[in-house]
Amino acid sequence: MAEKATAVPERAAGPLADVRKPVTVATLLDMKRKGLKIAMITAYDHPTARLAEEAGVDVVLVGDSVAMTKLGYENTLPVTMDEMLHHVKAVKRGLSRSLLVADMPYMSYELDVKDAARNAARFLKEGGAHAVKLEGGLEAAPAVREIVKVNVPVMGHIGLTPQALHRLGGYKVQGRRPEDAERILAEALALESAGACAVVLECVPAELAAEITKRLRVPAIGIGAGPGCDGQVLVSDDLLGWTEGPPLKFVKRYAGLRAQAVKAVADYCREVRDGAFPGPEHSFTTPA
Ligand code: KIV
Image (cartoon, rainbow, N blue to C red; front, side, top):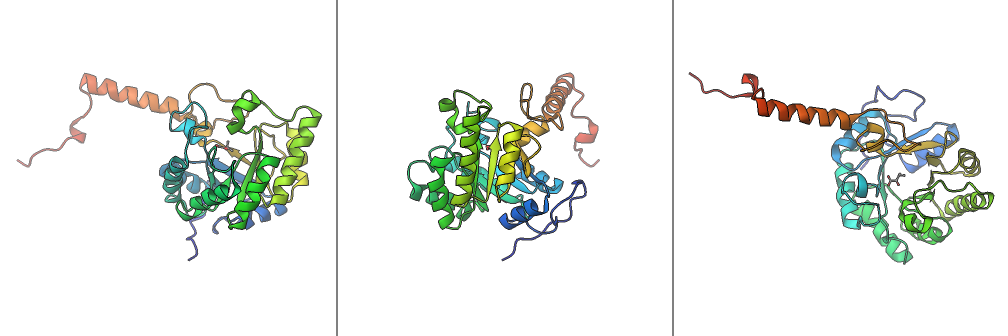
């Protein structure tokens, strides 16, 4: 059965793909061909999925960043398939137009390509996702090939790959040296050849990202990769200002929700303590 289309989001200005139709992998390819930029954000729960859709987001990613943004882990490594599925299902219930991509957690795809395909398919079969994303370059290509064989569209993710945090020695810009730039370009092309439907480029120099974008037939989605990509992805907590502390260089904060929320809760505490809340307008009475 076809998924239902939503109303045209009025707030999403700029050239858009047909906002009345559900976004598919084919839509993304079409957007690349037409030079329409792809807007992608992460979501981890139902309300954020609803607001992403209302705002006109094309692709919603349930990122393994949920480990840090929502689950209190230090990095993305501990999050499990079951935890990811829990969040994918919640997001799915909030979407009708945006393409839903589920991030494959660390150790769900690296060791065995059959396991990779089985885990990827769980996101479609149990979670209702439309595609998965996984990290890695040449070493990830066999898993991509196997996952595509069971009809699961796959997004690659190269450059800074947070699941390789300890091997990379931290969250650092990748591809600044010519040999590293060559390798990242080769990885992008290998993922495309393996059947990836898009490639996320994280924290690479803007010139390299623009060159990779030109060389790929599938869309390149940047995060910390400059303006030359076919689209952009940001962690929703970062763009909404839910994240504690100063934002990373590549993040633009479009709101300051955390500061507003802290103020709101502090106001509530004060009013409870001084008796200003609840007032008569928040109280029930017995009929005379
Ligand atoms: O997990 C995540 O949020 C991601 C994006 C940063 C691309 O992988």
